[in-house]
Structure formats: structure tokens, C-alpha cells
Image 1 (cartoon, each protein chain N blue to C red):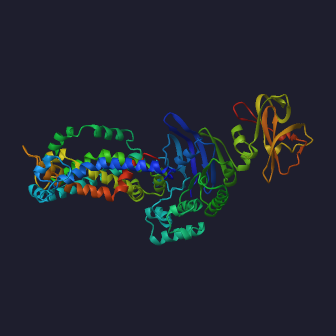
Image 2: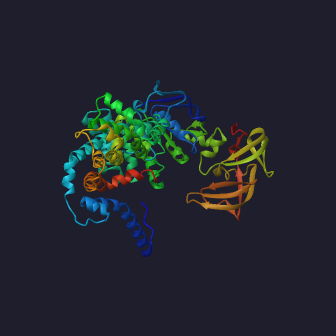
Length: 276
Length: 348
């Protein structure tokens, strides 16, 4: 960590002002969402920022209209399960590639290529595959799809964490007689914990926010996720913005809890490898 | 403990041959030092012995058993790395015990061996600390301990002292040497520091550009170098090397100065004279007086720098007596002059 350089009070205040504006820019939509969740339908159409006659009615109505609570539960389950699948596959694969040179040139290219392709391409084949193995409309099925879908992201994040472990540490373990698996589990994994946590959080957030696959592969209350739930408020002729805002706000809570409590790991995950 | 036998070893990185025609025999219990400049292949050779790098030709045998196709786990070696490579999340005790746990030794045996190494290395007070809470010297000792507990076939050292300060390095040099003697383990030690090589090795292997220049006991390499490279690399301060032309037992330097040599030869040569031999041939044929350009007092000895035939030469002696009125008279015993041919080979 470098020491902060001396700065004049004026530039400090300017920096603070700039930061405040930037934060406002990002927070404003969420505040608007929160405010809308307390507005009656007519009030929403006025387009004012603050509700003229605040009401709590949207919340029970939203939870009554669609099963928001069970959808949030489904989302949380799918995201955690999918992150587990992603890590179970990606951690050993990344270790083997970085430390043992296994398919060192091919894997980064394949993962990048598969990640830049539009996800909708995979939708129809995956749908039929899932149907064939009877995993359509199940939490396990959706978690499997997300688990595989997030592998490229997890790989690119984890790669820099694995690289940060000095090669000599692995080599010392091999010379000490430890097999490659044992070295991974006993030596590398404990050192990778911050990277694994960061990667898990990012995978959880990506899965939690996913809509395309969720809307095509889940149909029933037992498997639908909250992102699908929010889209259900959009009727043929009428959009109930107040209830939608209430459901959205409730659905956001788990992700924000993660962001607030695991900030340190998240920032570590996103900036790892940017500086030596 | 095993004898290590390496024959015709080759190693390439892509199209670049980093090791070629390496033949080396390390006797059981012997301490062999691989020394050479950066990029000479000494660390690569050590990694080939360890199994951390695959070889592209030749053989490596431990006590006659071929091991070059075995992974590092199956060679039963110990290795001390330059940056120690201790497991950062394990305590010193767990670091020492790791290889023994892998081997599934009985608990009492593990405890006994860890205690033995800890006592020998005086690291008992730190057994429950993690590596980050240790100083460089203490980490070095733990790395040694990790190597010792294993009762390995051989010890491999990859520049283990280069991260330590000068004073600690001298101390650890002695300690490692003493420990190696005490447990009498076959050791291969890589360093770029020729002083380390001279003081520690039973034998020294001088490497340059991916091949072995010479193998010999420290004083053999110093007194009887096989090539110009070895002559220039071994010895501190380094040997003076001057270009000249030989005719019989006379060598004429660039400025016309003639030196008498003990060896007869004809054609272009490089003359090699050690700094400590420049002032001891009084009364002989090679007496030259030169102006002193500079001098360095090192406490135990004094070095003088003067120009001879366009090259700077260094002469040293234990006491500052040789200079009078800014001039030094050098006197070289013809038997002390070494000659090298254009390819760098020794002329005998």
C-alpha cells in the first residue's frame, strides 16, 4: 500500500464534491425505486420524485400478486448452488492450467470466445438438453446452467489469484511428496480463500440478476426466480409500477447485503491483477 | 543418501538449448556447488535433478536407478529455495511436519523428527509462529529444517542465501556447511557467488552458457583453471587477463612489453596473472615499473590499479609496501603466468 501524497484542502474538497456527485448519480435510480414503491398508481403517473400521499399498500399487494418471498428464496438457492458448481469446476481447472501448464494456451481462448458470444445462442440447445435430462423447471437445472455459464468469468477472476501464489510454494509441496491434488487442497486452497470468496460473490450476483435463462427455463412457483417475478408485473395493458417497485426493492436486498458485508472481497476480486 | 549420476543431459526451452552435454557425478555424501553467471543454466540443472523440469535427452540416476522420468514427488529429495517457499498459512511446526504427514509417518516419529531439527537449528522458540512473523534468517533456518526432517536422498539448494544481508550470509554459509557435514547428506548447491562456492563445496562445477566449463576441488579451480572463463570467474579479486602474442617462451603485449613465460607457444594468446601473484617474482625476468592509478585499502589487504599495455591490472598484497612515489614495481614469476588460446582453452 502506498502512502497518500500530500494534498491541498481545496483539492480534497473538490474530490469530495466529485465523489458525492458520482454517488448521487448511481444512487438516484434506487432512491426513485424506493420512492415509487410508496406511491399509489395515480401518483406514479404524476412523475414526481417524492410520493404525494405515501402508502405501504404496494408491499402486501406485491407479495400477494406474485409469490415474491418464495421467488427470492429460489433466487438465493439457485445463485448459491450455481456458484458452488462454478467453483467446484473452475478452481481445479484454473490451478491445473496455471501451475501445471495444462492446456495453457487453449483454455483462456475458449473461455473468452464462449463468454463474448451472445447468451441467447445457447438458449434453445440448453432448453432441449435440460428437458432431456428432466431438469427443466427445477432449481437444480437452472443452477447447473448458471454454474456452467459463469465458468469463464470465474476462470478470469481466479487466474490472477492462482498466479499470485509463488510457484516455489507449490514446487516445495511437490518435492515434499504431496500429490498435485493434495497440494491444491492443502496448500493452494487456503491461500486462495480471498480469491474464492470474491469469485463466489461475483458469480452469486451474476446468477441472481440473470433473467433470460430463468424466464425460459422456469415456469412454476417452485423454481421461478425473483427476476422473472419482477417481469410478471408487466401486464398486457397495464404496468403496476408501485407494486413492481416494491417487489424489485425487496428482491434487491440480498444482493445489497452481499455488497455491503463483503465489500472488501468484492473489490479485491475485481481489482486483482491490475497492480502487482 | 544417494550418489547422483548425470549423463549427456540436454534441456531446451523451445529452440534454445539451455543445457547441453551435461555429465556430472556427485558421490554419496558429497557437497557439490554449481556456480556460474546468470543464465548459465545452473538453476535449470538443479530443477532437472529435482524433477521440476523435464529433460530433453540424457539420463539422471540416483544410486544407479534411473529417475529422470519420475515426478518430483517420487524422487524423495529436499530442496531449499531462494525465497524459502515456506507454506505461509502453516506454523513453523506444521511446515516442518508437512512432508512427514504426506508420508503418513506415525505421530511420535513426526514429533521426534521436528524436535530434532528444531533443536539443531535453534528454532524451537518459533515453532508456533507463522512464517510472516519470522526474520529472513529465521525463515532460512525453517527452510533448512523442512529439508532435514525428511531424511531425503539428497539436498538441493537454489541460491538459498541471496536474500540475506552480508553478515548473516557468512554465518548461514558456515551453518549450512556444518549441518551438511553433520548429517552427511549428498548436496547440490546453486549459487552465482564464487566466494560461496569456494568456501562451501567439496567440489565446484563451473557452468557457462549451458555447459560445464570445469569440475574440480576449489583450490584446483583456483590454481589450475582449464579455461579462460574459469580463470576469470574463480578468484577474488578476479584474474588479470591481457591480450598478447606468444613466440616461444616470450609473450609480447600490445604496447611491446615482453613477458617471459614457463610455457612455449606461438600465436595470439591471452595472458592470465592473479592479482596476488603480481608482486612476488622479485629478481626474475618479468620486472616492470608502472604508475599507480588508484588504490583500495580493504583492511586485510591493499589493491593497486595500474595500466599495463592498455588494460587495467590489479595487484594486491597484504601490506601497503609496494608503492614508492606513486609508482609500483611488479615482478611476475614466469611459472605463475597462465596462457589461453583464442578459443579460451588453457595452453599447457
